[in-house]
Image (cartoon, rainbow, N blue to C red; front, side):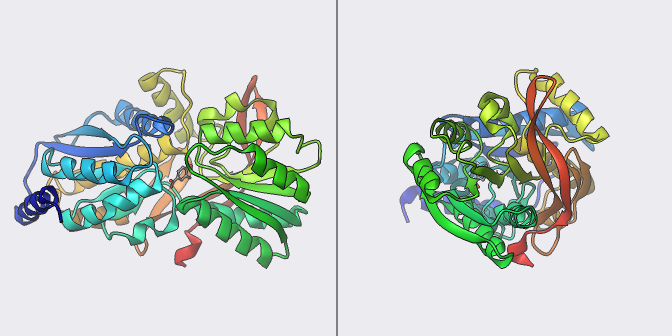
Length: 389
Ligand code: DHB
């Protein structure tokens, strides 16, 4: 152990044994990607939090809620670990939150455990994350939660042969493995699989392999955002749609934040996911209005913004129920039993797994009022993470 880490461990130990302070201000340390190729993840989460505070204010039960942001700059476990330690030791945050990318969430899990700090995951979606610390609760989803319904829907709708393309790290491997298992169990055939690097993938050669294998559909998991645009560009340039190949995916591919920029090649793509900006409900209408009021109209909320909004609702409820005296165990008891009617629909945390139970919608990309949206047309209610059942 290095000197610095030793010092941090000593400080953490002192912090752990200190009685829970009644803080007037409750601090939430938001560890996110605020720069680099995944900068939109941090931006969407912060925008979701601002939408929550637009409606509910920045105090609860007399306690001011302060967000302290830290930038991981991308998939960077070392930075994530360092900034989480700073948040706990120096800023004395009572909650950790954020975490767009799996490697960052995994790196911070032991710190949540050591310091007994509740860690509210607002995106990172590899199934194993919640098993890395009893202080983690997840408000997003797991990839298996989305891919099993996708496999079921595809099999029921005449898709018999699929080629899989997945990002070569936690969530991509989860997506690939669980899709393949469920699709084969339903009688489907996998004609090929390829994993692409997380950093700066070049899609053209992979897309060509898919075309040469002539599947009925390609199943794709790529981390939300720019990579989906690049994939669909290659898909279009190499004529896969003309060759009759369909695209199916978890909704990361058709991320609301970039969907409109993808243009016509994405029309008709079928995905399964937990949130669409086009979701028709009073809660979503109120959320869209607050999001625009707080952040302007140049940005559309995506699933990360909604997970951040719901995660904040849970943090507010915890502060209210504990009267601002945030003890790790007691906070986890509140977080584990949290339920709400989210902009995405009814959600509840499963206390046994600390995973969210939610509706998985089947959506098709359509043009509405000149803009592209994920239009929901079917759903699987109350879906749990299938790897923990
Ligand atoms: C991760 C998961 C996602 O679903 C996504 O769109 C981006 C990143 C992750 O766990 O790293």
